[in-house]
Figure 1 (tube, helix red, strand yellow):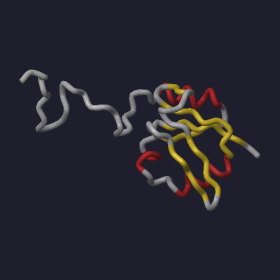
Figure 2 (spheres, rainbow, N blue to C red):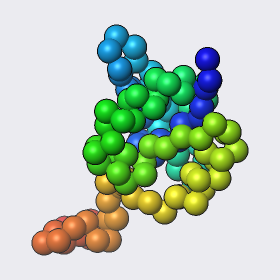
Figure 3 (cartoon, rainbow, N blue to C red):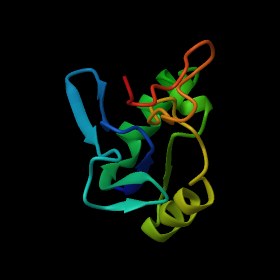
Figure 4 (spheres, rainbow, N blue to C red):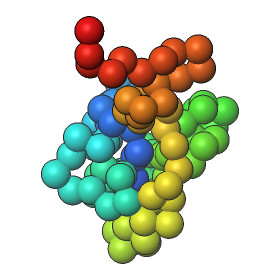
Length: 108
């Protein structure tokens, strides 16, 4: 069985499934992080390729938030290159909370 390493820049990771088989991809909540991406080693290549073909139009795949390589070092390198990519789950800047929302100064 050929295996690959998968990088995932989702804060909670992701459980992917094909038929009855599922694999948990580590996210930013993992202990193994590179460039803000969780790294999951030992994923069956055939399984992941099938899942990827079934989910090629998903927002996370299209945005490059989930990717793989045969070599772990290549996943780590790509994760570091993509460290500034946004996943939509970033924290809110308290000084600029959003359009039409004023920050609270804490004084009453």
